[in-house]
Length: 392
Ligand SMILES: Cc1cc2nc3c(=O)[nH]c(=O)nc-3n(C[C@H](O)[C@H](O)[C@H](O)COP(=O)(O)OP(=O)(O)OC[C@H]3O[C@@H](n4cnc5c(N)ncnc54)[C@H](O)[C@@H]3O)c2cc1C
Image (cartoon, rainbow, N blue to C red; front, side, top):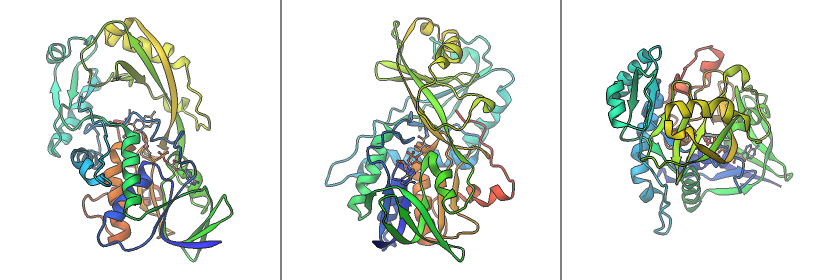
């Protein structure tokens, strides 16, 4: 059976659901929305396996603006996303991010900070003495400076925000269909519809790629090369004997990151580019803790000298191999095939701004709240990188 929807969104994770919500909430949108999601348990999607971090500390103006937009959105999200008086609990812990820099990394930290402040971010530059008195649990050996954001930074429950968007989108009229998009039909430079694993088909006016780490595979169904690949990231959960005050999300110059999670802590590190293959499985890389993470943690935070790993999980980054930044908006050839992909480890915090931006493109044909045209697909063909230096 072939049916029709004005907007089909392929993937109902945080991006697909944010777009569905902002579309449904736009008083100028009068069409139908169909979200095709292959796995409504969301067991393996990037959103459910994410850390949910939000930070202003980026090197690209657009990324800083998107996070500031998210911080403002989160403060009123309960009201905006409430359904029948029930508001989602997003568990926003505004405990800050602390980026640490060695002498060689200090100029970049300082220039990022100047940019962040100029855009209205609240970030403080701390010298080693200030770091030590503010964070006495830190070993400042080899540290030349730190940048700490006391406001607009921390972490949320990413699944709560995704389900909050999805519930509200449904309440506003979006339909969620449990099915996998297995084919995309095109004719004369337009997408005309999708084919589904169940055997069904849907004709559409607009198709949005919100397939997260599988975005490259989805784009290939229309013959489009999209440089997004699933890249595995393993998170470790550990107990520490000593009790510590609430830590900010702390990033060592080596790239090892750690933050509290309930009464425990979690840690992660991204492998170097040449040891970061595309990944199809979600088996944790267990050796990483002993090899790369614990030696750094034990040195940087001496209380972590004695810890016990209690768990590990792996998730896939929706990794943009071109420049580690989002790809947003229409394909240069298929004008009604829109992309909302490639967030490379920062998609949770970008979901409010990206969701709203894609809805604006669909309804108004232009960006309104934030100009995100720098993320256009066309930059890839032009070889114009929008490089983000602060990828954690
Ligand atoms: C370990 C880890 C830590 C992270 N930490 C952070 C962080 O601290 N802060 C931050 O901002 N971001 C973080 N991220 C990144 C963030 O989680 C992602 O950028 C974001 O979740 C992407 O959302 P999405 O909706 O695009 O993808 P997903 O959540 O993966 O959703 C895509 C959906 O599409 C569905 N799908 C795929 N193909 C098809 C198809 N053909 N048909 C139908 N459905 C399909 C999938 O089933 C899935 O549900 C982290 C990611 C990981 C893995």
